[in-house]
Image (cartoon, rainbow, N blue to C red):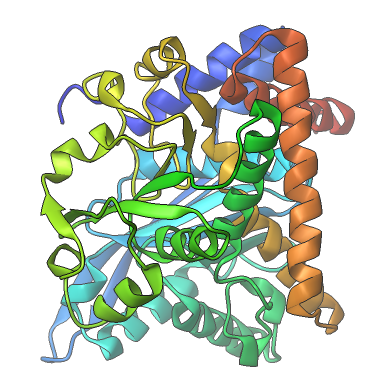
Length: 415
């Protein structure tokens, strides 16, 4: 949509608003607004028909003052440099907010992975990794899965990097298969972290957690796992949507049955729910709305029609700045993306620690450690928002940006 702001400009606008709250010096503001490194690569790939095709790839490292850069790699036909820059910056704030020793980065390739073969996908991944070799590593920049990528792609990245080094380096990526040093609980970590923050929100808002209804936009990794976890806790999933369309059932949708169905069918064709207009998805009357798809989904055009009590942002930047005041005026409590979906990078940190130590944790330990970190972060943000009379998004960003600014001041600028 033409009137939806550029995601990079949107991210900068929110940062500027936050930095005005923190009263930072002009030099610090300039420093935090700029990515430290931007890499653009042309990736030659030998296709199955013998031809050579060229794909455009990016890796952006926003900030490394608090530790090595950390961030996913996205394979999507609509990837842009501005999107990758914005997501790298968000990763900096995410890692800072949950207080893990990473900075932020992000990568992406302009490709529709469903339109190329598995062999072409492997060739693309390995050549992209080769182009990144001088810039990634367990002490430099640690990639992870994102939209369009998965554990298999992380395995190819780790293998390519390890061959170049001459020995296995499990800590170069996270989100790997368990058999290659991945962490228990990583696959559903983003969703589980979001649920932990949601349960905290219900507690501070005094909302009884029984018989609550949920609508989830997106049924990929984050949306599907969130639906299953909430279903197991007794929440009623009444509406779901993905690229194929939207479905609803006021009596509840079983996400386990739906997940089996979508292995060979489009979500919109699920027989135990009614199909409806996806453009009206955010009009669904529910207690909890979870946008778990892409950026810029809740805008000034549709924000007034949102009928949820709580929005838990499972996706990155699903709400535009122009939509925020509308949602606030309607007394909708927002758990912002920088807090809500940081469970993924938190368990990625656990995986990095386990890989570097060659000592692996049980799933129970992973989930308990995740819960402790997510709850601590939520209450820090909530207390700060109450004390400073800020909304949750500005409170979360103020804490996160403040920590990075302090690290930058302590380290200084060399030379």
